[in-house]
Amino acid sequence: MAISGVRVDLDSLRRFLVYLSVERGFSERTVVGYRSDILQFLGFLEERGVGLEGGSIRMYIASVAKRGYKRSTVARKVSALRSFLKFLAKEGFDLPRIDPPTVRVERRLPRFLSAEDVSGMIERALGSARDRAIVELLYATGIRVGELCALDIGDLSLEEGVIRIRGGKGGKERLLPIGGKALEAIGEYLKVRGVGNGPLFLSRSNRRISDRSVRRLVKRLAEEAGLGKDVSPHTLRHSFATHLLERGADLRSVQEMLGHSSLSTTQVYTHVTVRRLKEVYEKAHPRARGVEG
Image (cartoon, rainbow, N blue to C red; front, side, top):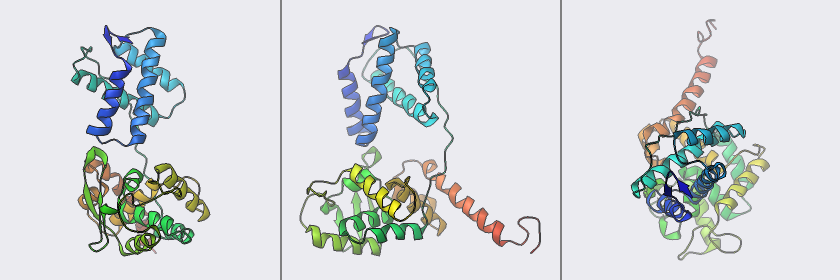
């Protein structure tokens, strides 16, 4: 496809996706999403016979917005496009100076479960040592579902009570402590699974478990516990962070455990805890509402 006199073919897109996966450490799910977004953009230009310029980008974003996508989806598509243009420039493509407009998205407070809700999910998993170990570990460490699926037995040290997380965003590794309940659950699971090498969590067909399977598992346990259908592994990650901060953990430590490169990403959880503190204050303080108790 010709873009402003420069041919950008599918090989350029393939190199971009490899760059995202290998150098940036993006998850497979994110890379697939970026691929879809860039193909949609290139298809838009080809369909209309326009080149890559500020006007055509604005036309594309407007067309995406008219399709009824959420602002968060439009923002993701713009982010994918911005990253692709930067990559092409690094590759030596002579592109016009274009800065895709930023789509502002209101940051929503993450949903989290109470400790009792999490316990309810774990109770539903007691019939399967593997399922219980998965939920316990997600909640005990706050790791992403992709990080959990990538775990090998060699990443685990039951004696020291720590686990090594590989393949996080940016390809960084980190060591995380594991709570006693999760250690106990993993120990029981390993009695069934057996020790040795290879993936820590196996599917029913004895292959590395997929993130789709873990998502289905978490959703099923949440529904059985009466928590609704919108509970995901990320909900357990949010719960992990929120509960730590509510109980006095400092923000920097939570940032390190979550694997966030920026403290601002972690700070969204402070809004949750401040909101909870306000609720407690308004209920407990005799003059909070201007009326003495």
